[in-house]
Image 1 (tube, rainbow, N blue to C red):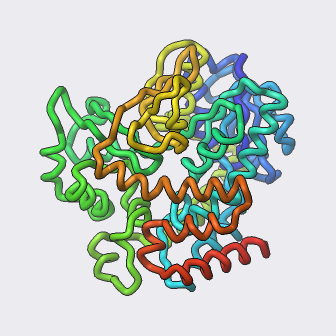
Image 2: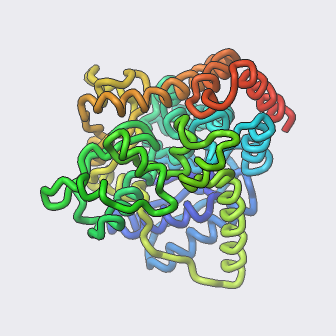
Length: 428
């Protein structure tokens, strides 16, 4: 009888998707216990109602509990799903956007890299390590499925400081595959691909349909307006990147420049996109709550997240292939990606089954891709170091070496920006 704990279950829409996915598996639908935990009473209550309604809709025998006590939720857990946002939209995300803006630095998402990603990493790493510390005490054999950003930084920190088995999960690989299939007018289920790199900066090393290399056709595609950045990267680097154009625009020095509205317009870069999404998600949660209070039904459609299929694979032994975020250094001493640092977190093909999560090594990446990825890995590593050691100079250095920040501001300007961000967050 597997117990699946959700830390940050108040992300009710995400919880709805993953719980619903779990209930589609015959091996999980009747014997699973969903242990929901959140620090927000109202959101936790909504998540509990959603989960109960889903169990009813599926005619399943699963059980649900809800608690504000994290250790209680984690006690005896076989699988743990993390989906929390430390500091919330307000004040933390607002600070991460508004303070850099005053310094002349604009961002799009700011949850993975850049000064926004650095700040989010610094405030989130300690919380995730606390979760792992609880797990070490009450459920040391649990598998942690982390959905929290900045994904690579968090999984890197856990690998450094915890014995808990962890895999980071994102939907960028399967989401991008579906987008490419649409651009190429092909069924997504018929694409054959090999993807590797780091979270949000992984590349389709192979993209085929029934043995045909699809890259020649892909280079002829007229890019959708919302995806111009990635197609421009394909043009110059030869491979398609997994994460969205609005994300990648701020992972590199080429697309967002102060005073260059021509670039912003040419590549359709949606500045300040993440605050808009946060407000939309808050509204979606409120609408879901209102619908539940009226007795409305919950959506039982399958999502495209990996989590439920991974749990099913581990429980039943039925292999499930996916892309996961894992340490680059393998248990046998080798590397999953030969030309990236051994201590970093990489996103590579994995298989879930009776033995747990088994990453598949991919060898060396094309040199230009490894070089591009390394610019992000350096920032991630310094941020992790800062979070684990308290070294303030590592925060400055992470921001100074960030591709977008370094292309916009001088060293002294970056130093002052970091000081202002740290001061603003300390005041909340």
